[in-house]
Image (cartoon, rainbow, N blue to C red; front, top):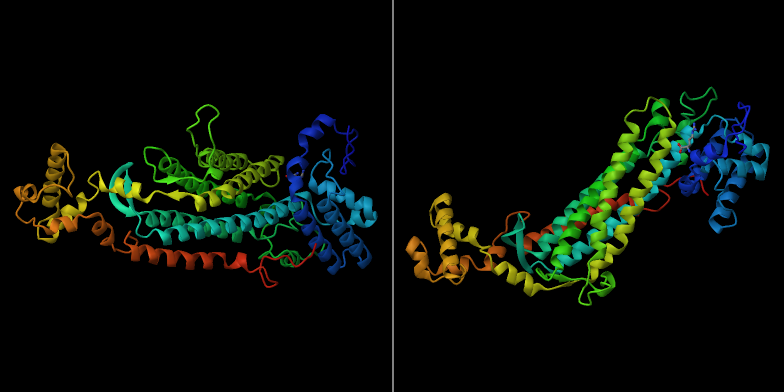
Length: 479
Ligand code: ARG
C-alpha cells in the first residue's frame, strides 16, 4: 500500500500494484530540471501577486534550487515508488521546508504542470537536435566543396540515368536536412507557449499572472484557453512527425551508403572505426551504423502513430492516457540523437573511390540524353532525336561498345547531322559541366548551392546560437 499526497478523499490506500501501474517516474524523472524551473517561475509569480509571502517564496526557491543541485550531484536519488516527478519534487520540497513547500501547489494542478514541463523539456531537446543537424549540414557542404568535379552516375529506378557529381548528390541531402531544421524551428515556436495557470482545466479564482510566468520561462505567451492548455499535445505530435521525416531522410541516405559501400558499387569505404566485422566471414566489413539508422526509422514512425492514436479519442480535458505521450516522444528524441552521434563522424571519415564512381558513369549510356540534345541543337525535333539515339544505343549493344567508342560512320548512317563534334558533346565532362541550369550538377551550380545552403543554415540557427541574455527562449528564472 502507498500513501499518496492526494490521499484526502480515499478511505483506503491505493493497492501497490495500482501504484506501480500508475507511476510514471521511471520515464518522467528526466524532466526534473524543467519541473523545477516551472515551479520557480510559479513561486515567483505567487509572491509577486501576494498569494504567498516573501518568506515562503524564499524558502521554496532555496528548497527547489537545493533539490536541483542534489539531483545533479547524485546526492538525491529519484524515488522509484513515487507517482511521478512532480509529486516527488513537491514531497521532497515539503520535507525540506515544511508548510512553505505545501503552498507551492496553490493555483496549479499537475495537469498544467506536466503540460508545461514537457514543453520546456522538448524545447531544449529541439535545440540539441538542431545543432546536431546543423553540424551534419556543414559536413555535407564541406564534402560537396571538395567534390564538385567528382563525376558519378545519377540514378532513377536505380538504373544509371544521367551523370552528376558527388558534390551535387551530397547537396541534395543538405536541402532535406535544412527543411528538417526549418520544421523543428517551427515546432519549437508553436510549442513555446505556456499552459501554466490553466490549472486543472478551468483556471483559478486566484489573481494569478500567466503572462509573468510565461515571460519568466522565456515563453512567447500564455495559452489562450485553459481547457486547451491542459489537453493539447500537438507539439509532441509535431515534433515526433518532424523527427520521423528527418529519420526518413537519414534512412534514405543510409540506404545509399549501404549500396555504395557494397562490392558491387565500391564508391566509398567506411572508416574501420565506423564499420563492423562478421563473426564467421573474415572478409566482411558491414555498414551496421547505417543499417541501424534505417531500422530505427521504423520505431520513430511508430512513435507518431502511437501519439496520434493515443490522442484521437480523448474527450477534453486531461485524461490519464496522456501520460503515454512521454515514452513515445522521448523515444523519438533519443533515437534521432543516438543516430546522429555516429552518423556525422562516419561521413566525415569515409573514403571516396572517385575512379569507381567515374567508371560507373562512363558505362551504361548515361550520356544518351546528351547525344539526343546534340541533334536537337542542330535543328532536329527532340522526339526524332530521341528515336535516333535509341537506335544508336541498340547498335552499340549489338557491337558491344559505348556511344563514346562507336565509329562516326555508324552515327552518320542514322543522320548526316552527326560530325566529329558529337564525341565532345557526349563526353562525360561535357555532360556534367554543361548542366549549368540553376540547381544542376555543373561545378559552379553546386558551388552556388553550397553558398545558399550555408547562408540558410546560419539564418535558421541564429536563435539557437545566441546563447546570450537576450535570447528569447532563455528562462529568466535561474536554477
Ligand atoms: N504523470 C501524469 C502525466 O504524465 C501527471 C499528470 C497527472 N494528473 C492527474 N490528474 N492525474 O500525465
